[in-house]
Length: 435
Ligand code: HAM
Image 1 (spheres, rainbow, N blue to C red):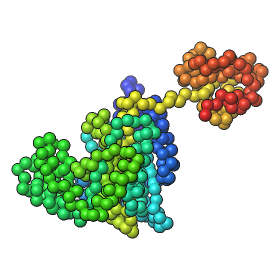
Image 2: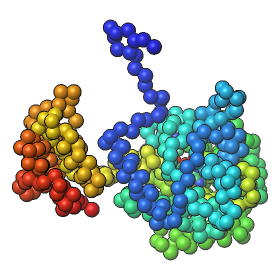
Image 3: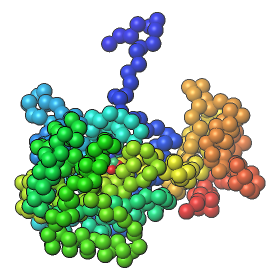
Image 4: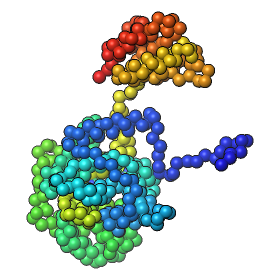
């Protein structure tokens, strides 16, 4: 394509609801991801990477045909080469389950897995809600007991502690088993039918497709009706109640407060027994940081040998926003040294010195001049200061002749300017390296 030279080309912008993450913001993401990976190591969860594009059928079957996500939020398209129906993943659980089934990964017992990556939902963009967003997810597959439910819940709690986050609350519920939910659903439909005149349009639509979602309504006028609706808790059998009690006992033992929220139903169909959300009041309407629960039927639904599972997904944008709101920031990461050159002739020696220091573990910026050389010392020192480096390394004509480099402490790093032989740079790096 040729661009007429009398005007700038028209700008192409990012897709609405999809964000660029540039420095210095990207440093916050990397800091966060480092914390997540360290946490996963401590709990023995292993990383898993699955495709961003999956057959649409995986999500339709896995998440449920009448969920909001499948009904109206998926980026789906037809592969123009072979006609396959594909979707950008709106969440991570279905893809991980597909991968585990496809590779028979549970043949030798349960697996504790985690992932970090982008998800896509065609929602109305607003604060804390994007069309491309990022999740950390954990999935513990092949474990049936309440011990693992408690484990994954406590992993999120440990992450809040590692990040220094305060005021994140835990809400808990049990969705029981399918037969218990059917009995409750029948009772709900009977109840809402008896009060059909008080249902809004959304609720009317859901009454015969997904009446449970009526309980999720944000419509204040519907609240009294919803409050008084039949409770699933009253339809739970002994085994389901026992499972919930066991999770509660662990939470109590570690002193983790929680609220039993009978209205907590989650937006995906695959859950049973334990469901939970970590929420905050500090992010406005999008206050759910992390949500998950048990999904014992999903592996079989995707074509695997029946096996239980539990997990959660956490919205990275929301967690980072809450961190910012609470004034929590990662420690700044400046280079250790900035290399300043006396002229173009110093470049080979300066580049070699920078490589030596980097190999010794220091973070080093080599001044990048232009086509005509490095520019004046003054301009270079301005850059060195702005970089936040602790030391400027100077390679002028003098230093070059002596096979040395001058080391100048910057920003109150302390000490006098000194000369260091190029051959002694690894020793110097050892002295100044921070852990
Ligand atoms: P989810 O509740 O749909 O669950 O999403 C988990 C988290 O992702 C939410 O709590 C929220 O923090 C974040 N999130 C969701 N949608 C958006 C959005 N449009 N913009 C920004 N953040 C968003 C799941 O996805 C399940 N796969 C969780 C799970 C894993 N359950 C069992 N294993």
